[in-house]
Image 1 (spheres, helix red, strand yellow):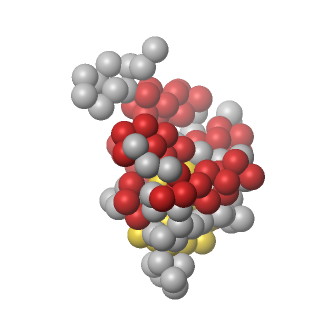
Image 2 (cartoon, rainbow, N blue to C red):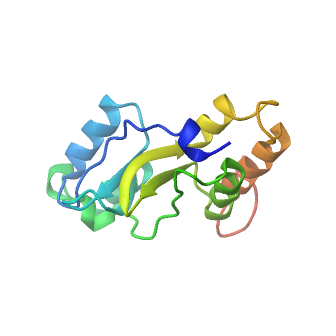
Image 3 (cartoon, rainbow, N blue to C red):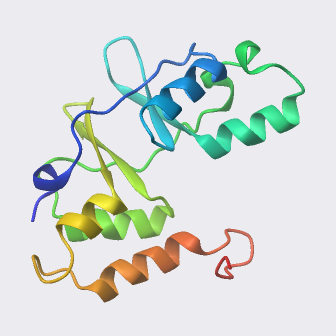
Length: 152
């Protein structure tokens, strides 16, 4: 099964100059936990998560309307491509310890692949992915970065 068969293509994104207040509003309205950050041409330049926003606001002592996404976004982002095999993308999620991968085609953001997409559409005998493959990826994602211990 290919990424393009199960990815979400209606992806909300924001720009580097978007305020954290605006980013939170987009996340809330679209019931998501991550926003891809794109340049004016739609090329992926980073991501920002609800956790990134919470930590930034808790440590910067500034209003959400005064802090831009560009100040706190993650610049180095693991990605996938439409023709990539879902198994390979799942492995990349585990290696990067992320639950979502932006889908890029010709440098442009065209979708998002989440662990939820994989669980709901690719697991349980519909592909060569097993429940164990997905569980192993979730285990890798849940490990604390500093200690390697599984979050509990």
